Length: 205
Image (cartoon, rainbow, N blue to C red; front, side, top):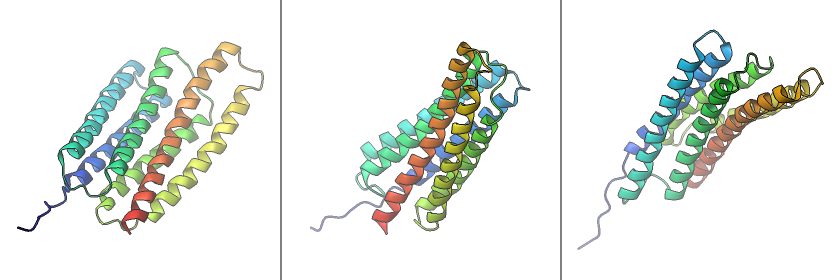
């Protein structure tokens, strides 16, 4: 009797799309937090809920991998992509939490550029995840995310330069640096997501 493979479980694509949508929400909450007009405690609570929902989606992906015989692409790549998406959310949640905990009144003006980069990366990632199934039209995604990451790096350096110009006291510099590093970490994590997508596309082509 010939061995018959079960069909590939297409639900993975839905889960990755769901994971990316969590990032869109997280980036919007981060922008709201930096806007300074909303209730910071309430925004932080919403962010924690969003981060928890993102974790649940990540766990669902892992469970699906562990219970599925035929996966749409390499298991290691599925794990890596799920983990990288989760890392983005963790870094954004950390930034929001630190703003609340440190009771920071204002951030360097350039930080808004970082958040704009994050929102753009989130939108691009949300648009790219459904295209994993066809593996088409993804090259523009990773190219643009890498370009945005370079923009984020430049903004990051400018923020650090403004923080160390001697106009802020040492404690304020420490607080701001932690927040800025979390923002930079989220942008770097988006680049990791894009790089993994590129690796998957190359393998599957």
